[in-house]
Length: 174
Image 1 (cartoon, one colour):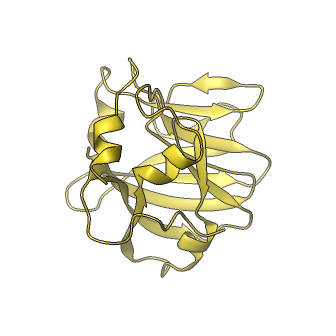
Image 2: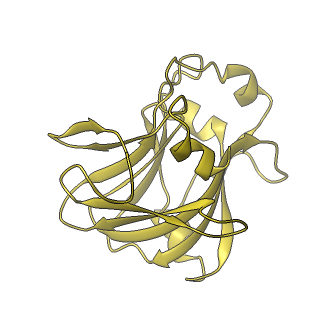
Image 3: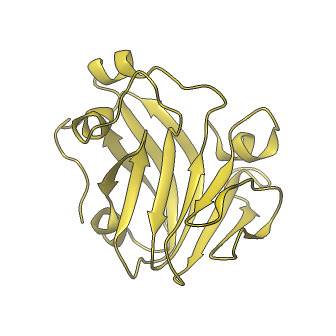
């Protein structure tokens, strides 16, 4: 789903989660919740079709998409589909970073550090990675989350579940 749709329409999931703050809706540009994360609209292919998400490094904070109703991704998992995120690394991570789906997390700081800052790239994570870490793929309430305690800035233009060629047993890089 294009990230602009996710943040622009009220019937689509959008939220930021922070410890002791809970789920805080993203209602516009700027700091969210305690201010550990800020979100701004950014242009990639068309006006404001991407979001720049910045973590300030003052403690654990996560950005997540929360589904209005749990989603059943068990068939997609069996079909060897992957969570694909199109992003640009703006500020490299200064601490471990996790990509989560359904409460199961995979380390991605190594994936991000392997990116060239300022260039668009794709992060592909097989759904089997989340299932192997305990996600109940038949009841996914949070189909996407990124969390870190450190500084990090990413611009995300697309998040989708799709088939991509490649190994299904590579599950992130710490």
